[in-house]
Structure formats: C-alpha cells, structure tokens
Length: 384
Image 1 (cartoon, rainbow, N blue to C red):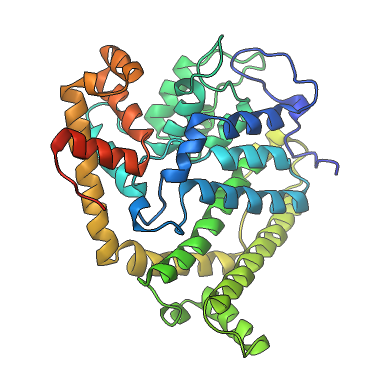
Image 2: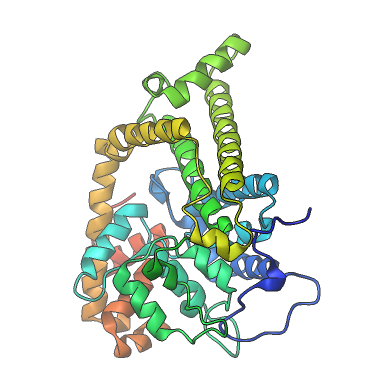
C-alpha cells in the first residue's frame, strides 16, 4: 500500500549515525527491525518481567511478549492509517531494550542509586543500548539504527539529558539536531513513534488484566466496576450465555482491544483530516495527532486507576517490589565497591565512570541472573 504524505518513507530517512550503503533487499527500517531482533538485549527481554517477577510463573507476560504484542497492535493500526508498518514494528520491538530487571521496581531503584550520577531513565537506556552497548559490528558500537527508529525509542527524556544528547551529536546536513532536539523544541516525534506510544498503552492495560486475573490478585467480578471492561464482559455473555471460565475473560479482552484500536483509528483520522499535515516534518510541528477519542481516553484512564489500586499496589506485588528494590540497591553497592565482580567488559569500562558502568551492567540483567548474582555476592536468597 502507498504511504501517506505524513508517513516516514525509508527512502527519505535522515540516515544513520555512521554511513552504510543501502541493503539490496530491505528498506532502512526493515534493516533496523532485523538488527533489533538479532540483538543480545532483545533476547534478554524473555526473562525480564512486566508486573510479575520471572520466578512467579511461566505464563505471565515478559518484556519480550509485551514488545511483540505492541508490534502487532502497532502494525494493525499503521496499516489502517497508511503509516510505515516496518518503522512501527522496529520501534515497538526496541522500546523496552533498556528496561531493568524486576520491571518498574528495578528502574526506580536504579534511578535512586544513580541520583548523584545523572539518574537513570529506561527510555534513554534503550537508546544507549542501540547506540553504544550492543557490540556486534566491526566499525561502530551499537546497532547504528536510523534516526527515525532512534527517535521513536526515546519516548521520554529529561531536559538535561536532551541537552547532553544534542551536545554529543554530529550536526545533521539539514541543520536539525539529534533525537533529543524535540524535547528542547517541544515538538512531536513521527506519527509512527506516536502510534507506538499508544499501542504500548493499549497492550499493557489488556495484558495486565489477563495476568492479574490469572494470578488471582484481581477477579473478573472486581473488574465489573471498570466500564471499559464491564461493557464487553456483558456483551460477551449476552451473545454467548453458555461461555464460562477463561474464555469469557479472553473474549472480553479481545473485544476491548478491538474497540480501542478502532477508536484510535477513527480519532486519528479525524485529527489528520483537520490538520492535513503535508509532510512528516509538518506532522511533527502539530499537537499529537495519534489519539483516543475523549470518551475512550477517559475510560482508559479509569482502567489505569483500577489497575494501580488493585494490582500494582496489591500487597503481594508490593512485597515482591520491596525485595526486588533491595536486590538492585545491594547489587549496585557491591559492584561499585568491587567492579571486578562484573563481566570483564563492564569492569574495564568502570575505569571511565564506575557508576554508569554499574548501571549499564545492572540494567542489562534478566530477573533470574540478577537474583543469582545477588545471592552470590551477598549470600542471601530473596526470591524464589
């Protein structure tokens, strides 16, 4: 299908940090996706968790399954909007590469550890992974992805870190800066990047419902107080009164996902029709164009509030969170005191900046490796 005028065209990409000749059979964004899938950081996502830690069960979502779900939702919406599906997929598959072990608990703990050393932002760490930490190619560090994929990976960035990124970048021939520039100029990323942000939200709301019910921490009955879930649960039972068990939950979630996808498509089409951006860069100058309708946005926020209260702050989850944060703090202190305990590459890098090298090493760990390392260095077994 032809791309819309406001979609990112790989032939018009702003390019890579290090020049490479075009691939003979793949576009620039397809090449990015392939590099991400073959990266070490991508493989590690299979043992990095979302809400439930890795030892708590084999069927809960991981960062890998979440990334695949975001890519699937993103491609479906991109196709309907004539956006670049390959770019959406590349961003979706890479957006969590910098996440720590133990989900947001690990991220918060590592940010606290790095408070006097520039802090820790998982989006910035994802960019750091693809720009510097992957070691696969002879002529450069990182994966040397296109500007457009890197822009989409950097979903959030503090003003201070954006300034640092821009200070380090090589000026672009068109006069533009690097991926930190939009945070300083207060403009938007590409529509494909905006789409990935929404697909991320849709995916984790849905799978956290599924995982929460599977875990027994929330029930389908409790979810009836959430209109976005209740309406599709009632609709499912009205059409299939014989249905029971997990099929009711799966069908309710499926319908909820479809409604959100169709809502984003319709609301975005209306926004695009009103703004009529004539180019990719014109779309970046607009207010965010990928959006829910106001009604769906309100319902999505209500679902988030329910999950925050009943799942993310459930006593059982909070207990695991506390243990996970203790492990991150103690691992950070142990490696800072004895950098030689890290893998050789990170130990060598610690001479140039021990706190950041330790943060890079910790952020790259899977849940189970972090737990094993903690036990090895402290003699304590906190999980599993």
